[in-house]
Length: 92
Image (cartoon, rainbow, N blue to C red; front, side, top):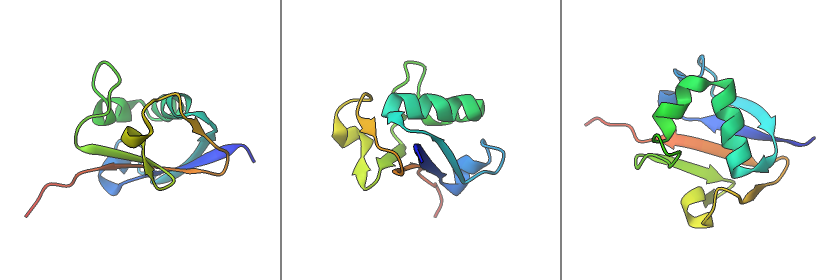
């Protein structure tokens, strides 16, 4: 299997037709996130700004590694990895 599992936080799932888990082809992180946006276009503006940079309140993990700590969107995402896309939840 050459796919990665994408897991969305519940607040983001409403922009993905309610899906919280789905699979996309493995590749670089940029290729994976582009595939996520192709599958669910409404997620793009909820996850990234117009230049493609992740919004400050969005956290993305490849396995247990924060994508911001990996230094580049060209980092490889191995088959059978998990990519978690999470947004902060306001409240109190």
